[in-house]
Each structure stands twice: as structure tokens, then as C-alpha cells.
Amino acid sequence: MRCEARLYRVALPMRIPFDHPAARRRTADSLVLSLTADGATGIGECAPRRYVTGETTGTVEAALRAFPLETVFARLLDTPAEQLLAELREHGFRKTFSVDGGNNLVCLLETAVLDLLTRSLSLRLDELLPGERRAPVPVSQVLDLSMGVTEFLETRGPFHFVKVKASGDVDRDVRTVSTLRDRLAPGVPVMVDANMSWTPATAADHARRLRAAGATLVEEPLPPRSWEALRTLRRETGVRVMLDESVCTLDDARQAVAQDACDAVNVRVAKNGGLLASLRLVEFAREAGLDFQIGVQVAETGPLINAGRALALHCPDALTVEAGQSDRFFPETIVSPAPVVDRAANTIGTFPGPGLGLRLNARAEHWAALSWSPDDAWRPVPPPEENS
Image (tube, rainbow, N blue to C red; front, side):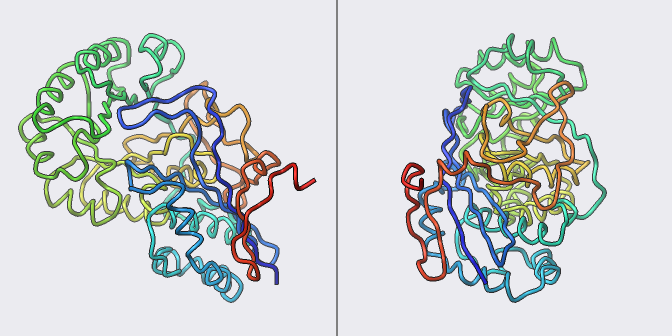
């Protein structure tokens, strides 16, 4: 029975940039993994960011190379797909496959395995998730530091929810929020994402001014897990706080609730350790009375996009959903069919199945880096010109 894996280091150039206080992005920075077991293939993706989970594509690749991949293939070959999916839903990927690694390693492996299993059963991945599916899903628009507010208002509507990336100049941010509030419908929330750039000394003043200008929430205003300072900020200013980088695990979320440190959490599939762990975080947020957003990593390239959409389709109670901007960033993608957003309505719908509904196309081979087989383990993939 044939078993093989292929790893792609994807650094697709972006047609337009994306800037925020924690990073400037001009290319994708993802790992994509293809797993083939006895004729069935699945693809997965992670998008590690050092400032979020401490991981990079380099550290995740090293962890993958050290991981006993043959144990994954053994389960795939020896366990009926329905049974293995049931184990994954009950126990999660990390426990089912004994993965001792970071969240992005789990995400990379899990998305590929889930795609393979559901594809083999002719199921769409979102059919595994509980609850009714909704579509179309309204998505938020993000004003980052590469675009002015006037251009944003003229080109990025219609607006359901707006996120503003903080600039480091609170006067500018107040002007931006005031302009948005004047031009947007009254019911459209405006959130300012500080990406950990404020300090306890400045946060209260910034939050009060932005709230007075019309901001509905602030996201991750302080260095990660500043529980006491976050609690003080909320109590002194009345501002609603969404946490992102502070909540990478379910234990983080429990701590945030215990410390009265937030009103909402940003759930992102790669950051939170895969689709199944993200689902558990959503369920915890509901139980704890927190709002939540289904977010994305900037410049996801394929499998992660549809994994996040699978979750979003089953979360009608999400505060908002981010669909990303892969259609704007990448004129050519590495997957077919390319994930789309209905820009006339700024909504997303269901994706085709089975699995994640995607296949790697010929453009992906440019980014192929390593291949794995039971006999040779990991080895470099020759450049495309050497493959002819």
C-alpha cells in the first residue's frame, strides 16, 4: 500500500500589501502538506506567526521532520475512516495521534488528515461539524495601514463589520474611527485591533478616546496575557475587549474568563491548533458567555481558508467572520478551485466537496520542498527544472 507525503513552503508574492503594528506582510508564509495513503489524498496547511504562537515555518518544518509520520499512516490504513473520524471528534487530533508539538504542527497534520478522511467518504468537511449550516455568511472588512480610510470606504463595501488596524498614532486612529462612524450604517460595529502595541500606561486613554469616537471593541490592546491590566482596562473604561494572541489554547481562554479579562475571543484555525480545537474553543466561549469571531491568518493560501469557512458555516452566532483576502492578494493560487468571496455582497458560501473541496494545482510544484516515503523518510524535492 502506497504511503507518501509532500511538503510545500509557500511564499506566494502578494499583489497588495498588508500592514499592522505587529508585522508587515508582502508574501504568503505557509506550509502546505499533502498526505497520500492507499490512493486517498488530503491536503492541509498552517500559517505560523512568531508573534502569535512563537512558531515559524522553520520551526514547524523541523517539528514535522522529527514527528513519526508513519504512525499517522498506520492509523489511516488500519482504522476505518468512520471510526477514526469519531475518535477525532471525541478526543481531538493531538490526543488521537499523540502529537507533542505546537498548534501549527497540529493544524498542518489535522487539516490534511481530515481532508483525506472526508474525501474518502465523499463528505464535505463541514458536514462533520455540529449544528445547522448557514449560508451565505456576511464577512468583515479590514482597514490595514497600507490603505487610507477614504479609499477603504469607496472600494471595500458593503460593510457588515469593520476592523481597523491601529497605527501607533492614537490621534490618527481616532480620526479614522470617527470618519468610519460618520459614513457607516449605525448597526455596523467598528473594532480597533492594536496587535499588542499599547501599554498599561497608555491603554486607558486610548480606549476612552476610541470608544468616544465610536469604536465598539478593541482587540488585543496589551502584551499577551496581561490579565490584571486587561481586567483593569475593562473595568475603568467600559471598553469591550476581544483577545486574540492571548488565547491560543483552551487553558488560555479559561484563564482569561477567570481573570475577567475579555468580552470576546478571536478563533483562528491555525493559531488555535486546528479545526477541532477551534470548535472546542467556540463551544467554551458560548458556555462562558463570551462573544467570538472566526478569524484568519493573513495570506492563507488554500486548505486553511476552507477549514475556517467550514467552522464559520456552523457558527451563526459568531460576532463576525473574517474571510481573508486571498482573492485580492493572489492573482494566481496554488489550489483549484480558488476560494472566492462574493464581493458584491461581502459574503461567503458553501464550498464544493468532498473534503475541503480543493486540489493542489500545477503552480504548487514551484513551492515543493520535501517528500516523504516509508523507505526514505524526508528528502529534498529537486527544483522543477530538474524534474523535466
